[in-house]
Image (cartoon, rainbow, N blue to C red; front, side, top):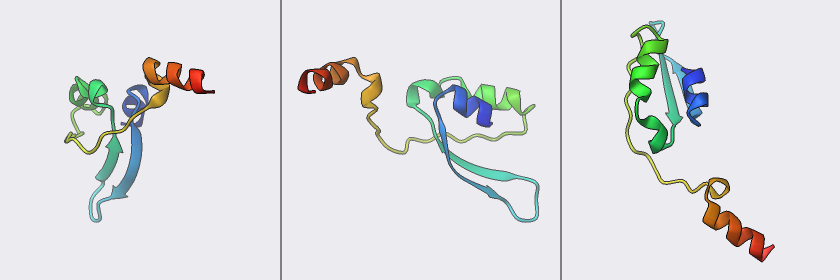
Length: 77
C-alpha cells in the first residue's frame, strides 16, 4: 500500500489497527490524476486483500508543479 501511494504522490494521514482483527484502516490523500488505475494496483500488490475506497476530499494547490505560478514567483522574486 505504501509503495503504491508513494509512487503516485500520495500521503498517509492516519492508520489504525481494527481491534479484534488483523486489518488496518488507512486514510491517505492521492492526487486525482494519479487515482486512475490505483484500485487495480492496490489489489494487485496485496493479492486482492485490499479494499480501497476512493472519494474526493479537498482541493490542494501545489505551486511547485504549476509552471504558470512558478514563472510568476520568479518575476516577483
